[in-house]
Image (cartoon, rainbow, N blue to C red; front, side, top):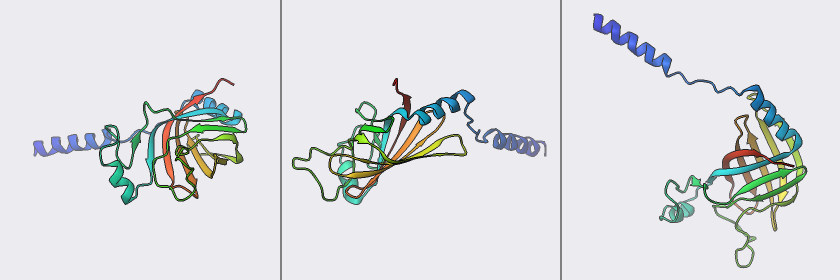
Length: 181
């Protein structure tokens, strides 16, 4: 009987000690993020790309052409040049694209990455309950338009989704960096 009581006590303690902790941001982190968003001066460097996986793409990407740790569902971008920079009303980016395209491929295939260099349209900011921000806008690359959805958290982590009529959607996750402008 003693053994049963001890094992029950240990089980209860384990259950309560494994409770997930809620990550709360400090006031300094919340203010820093608010400043970046209000001033529209931030830089996002992505660590991972999450393309929409189709059967054809999965066969190609799982053939061994990706670096270790990557697969058709998640591609490690560490060491690959990529960024999205917001500076006032301007947007600049170079985001490698992994996925299927429909139509509008330039001769020679020179526009495979998502590259913005211009003015954002319909820029909207919504503050989240968790002190983060949802940012949406439209941007144009050389030959196509994108709907961009960005979520920023006080921990300076980001999540971006990009949709276009010419490409399958892709999502990126990474870090937010303050720009010196």
